[in-house]
Length: 222
Image (cartoon, rainbow, N blue to C red; front, side, top):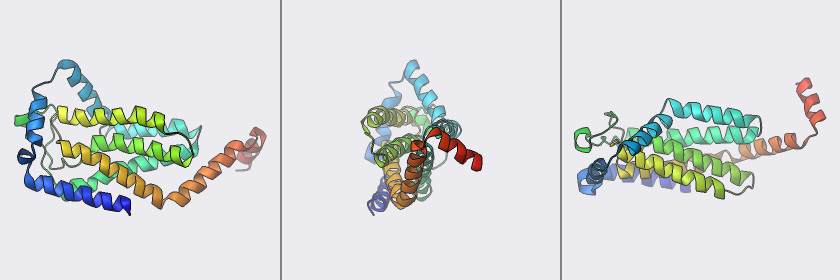
């Protein structure tokens, strides 16, 4: 219920800021100010983030990460993959319903061409946030500390969010809403899939605790 309520609030916020306009909210002025303070190094970093967390490379990174993790912990591989995808795709609901225009390229001197009216929320930021929340969910379900995940993941999400403003393709509420969408959808998905996730976790734990000889026999039988 909390996840559903938060998603509803996020949608309402998107509709409101779109109706009010980025000029009146001050978001356009912020983007214009950022555009005046660019340099070669920051631009290079922002462009790398743009490609790495985009729709072409991000799924490959997720696939490689989960594929590598599969050989050590199948539960973590499946759960992180599924929850990240759910959190990432949740922003598509906002993009379709809110239909917010992108910042005017000429005014913000956009470094990336984005013309579709799908500014709210940011898909790049949503992917980073969804991956973080998925990892945290898995750590919580396996009763492991989450401190390192937050220390590493939160600054990364922040960097992706700032890069979207830096490139001139999103407004501040776009990237903020992405984190909210990701958090709410991962929470909702984890709650609804908790019985399946618990069974998968326990099965993987039993498999890891079996002696190597028993696992080899089980594999030959299967």
